[in-house]
Image (cartoon, rainbow, N blue to C red; front, side, top):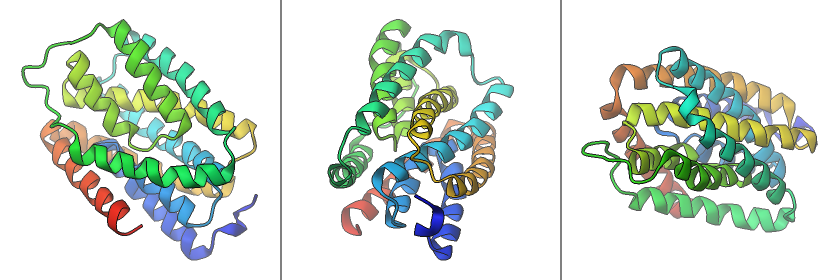
Length: 253
């Protein structure tokens, strides 16, 4: 499949949206819920949309993850078990979604997006105040790490909002650290998934590269905002973005 399926207007819109998604994803972790539906609305078949979204998202996430890492917000060593299980889950999830018929996948995706929107509406407030670890790091890796890896490989949108909540709730991370560590997790999961999709020939490279550049710029700006403004800045953005996307998905499909 080539880029001819996307009109010039759609291409400009998708690249602009990728910039905004990178900005939002670095702050609130909801970028994928913007770009994946947009790729589908532009006329891409489901597997091509998922694959192209994984590539551009991975490159954008690399920008914000590196920014967090070089500013001292990511300690890789204690994250290794989580990243390993995320890798395993991503392989299983990506291989699984490629076995689905495109018509089934096209029917399934809107329901997954609506489920995510409902999660955002009903999710508890994210707060690290008075938080104590509820499970060990190893058990967290085997449950949340593996589960998020599978979800990220199979589908992916909103992983950047769900995983920080799990880090804060289950292993008592502060919100800025949880946001930073989530970027590394997403990089591993989406990067693994992207490699598998690339091997399957599902990526529209011209579109993926154009969106990747825009996503990187937005992600860099967003990660700088998180580090400068802290967790008090993150929470209102998470709430606002997810509510807006929930309204869009539920009432204006």
